[in-house]
Image (cartoon, rainbow, N blue to C red; front, side, top):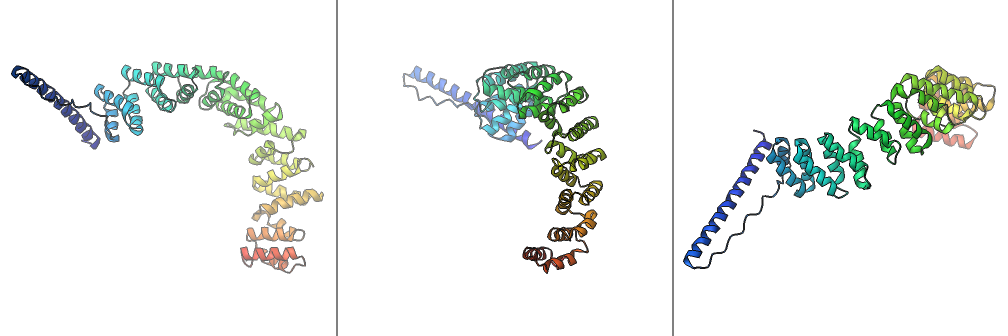
Amino acid sequence: MTSTRVSLHIWRALACASSGLALVFTLQSRSNAQLAASSGAAPPAVPQQTPPEPPPQSLSVVGALSEAGDESALAVLIDSAEHAPPELASVALTGIARIGGQRALGFLGQRFAEASAAELPELARALARMGGPEARTILLRAARSARSAGRDAALEALADLDTPDVRQFMLESLSGPDAARAAAYFADCRDARAVPGLERLARDSTADLRRAAIDALFAQGQSAQAVIERLLCDDDELSDSVLESPAPSIALRQAQRAASILRLRAGTVSAGPVFDFLAQDLSDEARQALVRAAHEPGSVDSAIRALGARGDSESVRALGQLANAADPELASRATCALLGAPDSRSRPLLIRAANRLPAEATAALLRIHAPEAHSALARLSISSTPSERLEAERLTARYGSGS
C-alpha cells in the first residue's frame, strides 16, 4: 500500500473516530439530562459538540482524494477548495475537475460566478480541464460577459480547447474586441474559415495585432498561401511584416524571396526586413540580388552588411570581388565588411588590405591566426603614425606576439 493510500485511510479513520466520539457525547448528555429531571437536580453542564473535522492539511492526502474518484472524496475536496490554504485548494480543484459529474460541475460553476478576480483563472482552468458541453457553456458565457476579469479568465482557458463550439466562438471573436486572443488561438489551430478574418486583421490592425494575424495565417498552411502572397505584394509596411515571419513551407519561403528580390530591383528599399530576409536566405538568387544592390548608392551599406551576415563561402567570395571593385567607395565598404568578420576564406584579401588599412587588417589576421599576422603586427609597431603604434601595443597585449 502506497504512502498516499495509508495517509488517506488514516485520515478517514480519524474522521470516523471523531464522528463516533461526537455521537457518544451527545447520547451521554441526553442521559444526564433525563437523570437530572427525575431526581429534581440541576442538569450538569452539557459538553460542547465536537466541531466538524477540518479539511485535510496534507498535499499527499488531498492528492490521494483527487485520485479516489468517489462521492465521499468529492465532498472532502469541495470542502478543501473552500476552506483549505491556497496551495491545497488548488490541488483540490484539480481533483474536483478530474472526478467530474453534476455535483462537481455545479460547485465549479457556482464558485466561478461568485469568485474574486484573483480566483477566476484557476476556476476557469478547472472547468476547461473537466470538459464537456456544460462546462464549456459556462466558460463561453463568461467569455461574452461584461465582467472583464471573468472574460479574460474564460478566454485564457478556452484557448487550450479545440472543439467545434470553441472554434465557432473564436471565429466570431476575430471581428470583436478579443481579436488578438482569437488570432493567437488560430496560430495553433488550423481552420480555413479563419483565413478571411485573419487577412482583414493583417491589413487593418495595429502592428502587434497585424503580426499575430500573420503568424496565424502562416499556421493555416495551403488554405492561406494565396492570401500571404497578396500581402507580400501590398504596401511596404505590410510586406515587411510578412517577411519578418518565418515561413513554414518551401513554397511560402520562395514567395517571400521573390517579393524581396522584386522590391530590390524596383529600388523601393534601402534598408530593413528585405535585407534581413535575404541575409538569412542562402539561395543563389538572394546572393545575386544583394550583389546587384551593392552597386546602388542608396542600398550599398545594407547590401554589404547582408552579404557579410550570410557567412557562406559564395558570399565571402562575392565580398572579395566587391572589395576589388573599380569604385573606391564600394571597395572600401566591402573590405571593411570582410575585416569586421574575418575568416580563413578571406585571408588573401586581408593580406592585401594591410597596405591600405594596416591596423584593421592586422587585427583581422590575428583573429584568424594567419601565418602573416606576426609580420603585420611587427610593421604596425614601428609605424610612423602614433595611433597605429598604440593599436599595435593593444593587439600585442591581447594576442601576444601574433604567432
